[in-house]
Length: 361
Image (cartoon, rainbow, N blue to C red; front, top):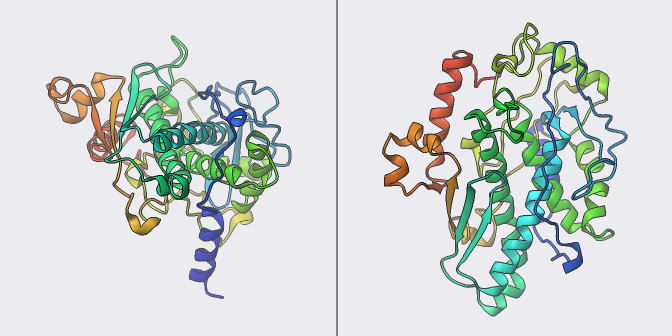
């Protein structure tokens, strides 16, 4: 069997089913409550050991009380460093938005409005026309899921944008040093897929399905034991993170994975640590944001339009000029305006962290 065919089969296995069952009302996930993430480094503060997760004991997923969940960093051969917090947050956002989109599509409403997790961040999704009665019964669940995946990815990526610009979840606690850490966006993609697997699980209700589906998904990504995670961190010491620094210094994480320009693409091109004996020769995973361009003959690829109120006018000013907050009515059009935002982020990262701050080598 050729390497190309093996890669294709693995990609198909990971993208999983498109169909999703609508959850019963009692299963509807609430607005997600964030969890505190972890940096892909052996410590955060000087000599304070970081949390490396044990892939054999992942705990129990929950909407609100996260005390029974295993959190922390793992290393996977096919997706690089992954943060279980970001995976779980992405799954929760996908499922929460799935219910919102499904209700909007089935009710035939022209718009869907929702807040994006941080104060002042707001999304408005505009639908060009209501679905027909037949489409509501046959297409709405799948369309809702794919729209939910796309918008959950934007919600989570926008959190990284705002933290680079100085937003803090906790007052006085800077998150600038963790914005676009190399594990963030790949973890989001895994979380989107976890949510879809949970919706398609025939044996569990929605919340238990998240627990049941996480370990098999990580196994497909070839997640490694703690010793390999530690070895991977040591191999990028002085390259992806600075051993002479520590959080909250921004230079502690010296390389940042923007990756937002890959939105909608099949392959996120995750950063994988070279030379790990446990991972030699395997292909990278291919996890899409959504499959709207591949489903229903691409009819829905550009069907809905999204307006983002970004929460910080400074993002608009830096990306589009000093008059942008007024001329743009304080909003961005997604995905059309993302390239300008990413270009400005890249310029700032290179100015602050060096000319290869957005590259793995």
